Length: 569
Image (tube, rainbow, N blue to C red; front, side, top):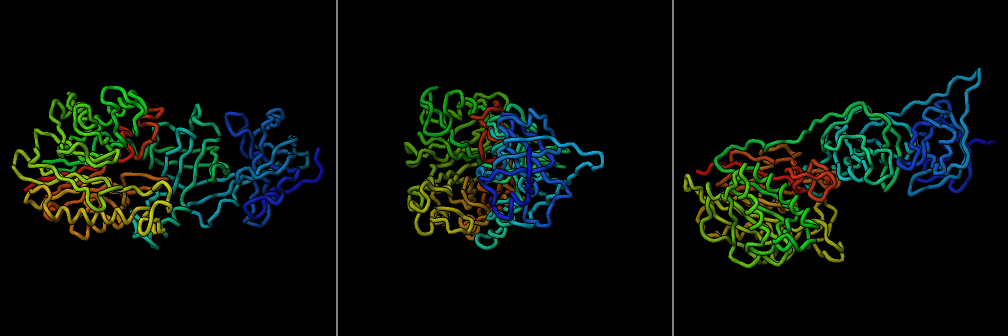
């Protein structure tokens, strides 16, 4: 059948692509993984016997054999078989593979010992900067690894895993610039994708339970290093154990205090025309059915938070009339009989038709049995708040039982990623590579202007107690947060929680985009602060538009709610 044999390490070479591209070659190797069938990868992996490996650590000893004609099935090829295969070598989107033309199983002769191979141990973080040397090879990962990203789990059966803990956003744990770059470099060597051995979208079955969450632990992974869709990925053969080390939290952590004040990004709460029609909206739910599910999830979360004041982010900016989004949300809360509800919630009306010209705005709702607004709400559309950064909303409240007052300020600063990139952003709004992304200039100017605006006592409270909360689109050590800290505002989350705390995940990196900051006079009255992890740890497909969605609080948004306890004096 086959004359001259070529070693797999020669085919793989010591570079990113094979020196044998387009050539027809024959190999003799052991089948390490069988992913035959259209519901899998339509092929299998083979590897050189231990006796045939070379001494070059840059060359892989394994290769993928693409077999859409199911020649391996006809030959009854299974894992552990020694085979002779012949086909053309191709680089398929970065993966070196053999397109199979012929295959035959080989049996050891009477005087021959059985061929063996050994799985290579892979330890994270990697010492080297490339996994190409392991492409197609059988690997064992002896560490306990945690899930750091679940974004593509439902669609592709993928999890991103890392050692010890989930990976941080660099500027959440280090200063922008060189310190953040060091964290990013370590991150790049610390994450790998754990796939499911299938190329199907929304596979019928998954190798992990659907309710698996980020930070759950996976032990004893054995699999094949493959490459596809721009990333190296491990196709699993065996997993010793899955530990649910991050179970769903039923209730928020206690924060103490007589008052609970919260921040919640609603991930585009748009209620159509307010009468069950008008979908799809400009953002948010695509149908009334999706909206009703989104509404139920958010109402359940707010009910269980039992907060006296809630700052809302990403609510439709359609005014404050009977058909508006914020009116609709309060109506839903007030219809509940198992929470604070029963006509107890109201919203702050700033006295204008809308809050700025953006599609979304911030808002405030409150429990009128425990707290009441004093005077008029205030906002500003000046300077950095004229566009991009949403107009803030400030309202002074009075605790009914004590007559003590504080002012709550809801903020939503401009996001990091603009359409058009450098063609749109100029000057200090460009991504300068220090880890803070686009529009950092506008966010920082907004933070400084917010400080000046609040110093003018915009609500006329004559009280120095201010609580700033919301989605700052800035991580813990970035310029906007540092500006607020320099002005004396104390970040209640970072001061009371660990340095690796988080409210949001982006591409498997975790950090605090959402913040609660107290003025110096209020800080001593804050009894606790927490982040309720009901959203960011969950698969997006538990959200209102997902295939696994249900009318519970989990994945009611893409941001986690923040809660502060306060006892005013």
